[in-house]
Length: 114
Length: 115
Image (cartoon, rainbow over all chains, first blue to last red; front, side, top):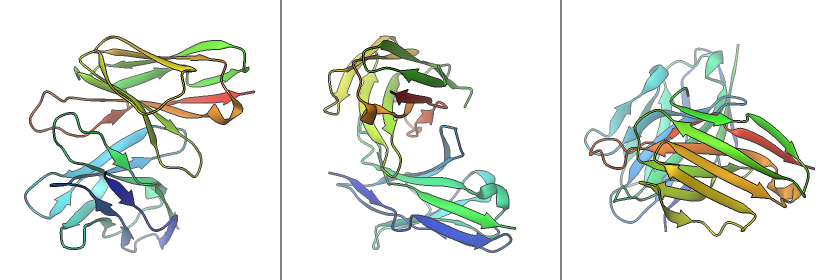
C-alpha cells in the first residue's frame, strides 16, 4: 500500500520569505511524486512532479521540490512567497506502473501574509 | 482547468432525488477518475476508467453509479444519497498510453449538498 503524510495542517509565512511545505511518502518500488495546488472553489492544479533524474525539480509559479530518497521526502519550496500563493497544497504518490493510481495527502493550507 | 469541465458546478438535492454529474475532458486522455473531497479528509478515489472500462471501484456505495460512454465523457449517477455524501466531487483525466506523462488533470468540481 502507498501513503502520503503532510504533517502540517497549516503553514504561515510572510510575503517575501522562503516557504516549505513538507511531504513524506511510502510506496513499493520507485516513487512517482507530485504536488498539486487548490484555490478556493477550484479543482486541483498540477504544479510539478518527480519521476526520475535530478532530485531538485522545478515547476509552475516559481515552485520547486526536492526528492530525498533516504528520508522518503518530497518537500515543496519557494524562495520568496507571494500573497497569491495562499492556497491548499496536496502531495501525491504513485508507484507509476501501468494504471497505478495516485494517493494524496490530506493537504496543507499555506497562508502568506502581506 | 479548461481541459476538464464539470457540470453542474453546484447541486442541491434531496435524499430521494436522482441526479447526474457530468465530466468531459478535451485533452485526448484515455483514463478518467472520480474523486470525493470532504472537509478535513484526504481525497478519496471512487472510480477509475481506462479506455472506457472500469478498472477500479474503491468500495463505493451502490447509490453512486458511474458511466463512461467514451474516453472523453464520464458521468456519476446519484440516487437516494445521504447527507454525509455532501462533498466536492472532482473528475480527473490522464494519458496512460503516453510514456512521459503521469500527472492527472482535474476539473473544477461539483459542489454537492444533500438535504
